[in-house]
Image (cartoon, rainbow, N blue to C red):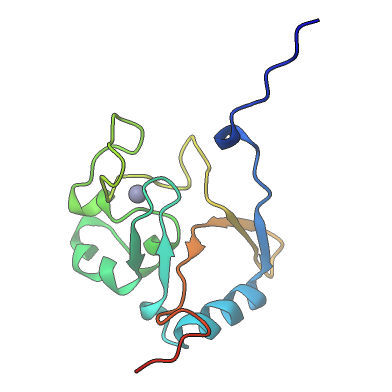
Length: 133
Ligand SMILES: [Zn+2]
């Protein structure tokens, strides 16, 4: 009897991390402080990390501080296409979480009941448990 092939590990459906809006704000504040411009997010496709502040210089190209939660900064800075022949560590890319491939790992439920997809938070720096010098 032939055994069914296990699906590739990277194709496993993921369980999103869910937050209420209040909890998401609290978690961002805990990691980065109350100034949301300092909050950093990780692109789920290329791993690039960008803060809301990083998007400010691309305002004339249509970016908003909020872009950091759902767009890779390469959309504005000229990154490679997310799903084209990108080499490992080739970043940033042009991924957007609201496109055809919704890979953002975080779901935030807004007070009105709507759910938004967001990139994961970056880790605080220094990482938790490490004493700053
Ligand atoms: Zn990216």
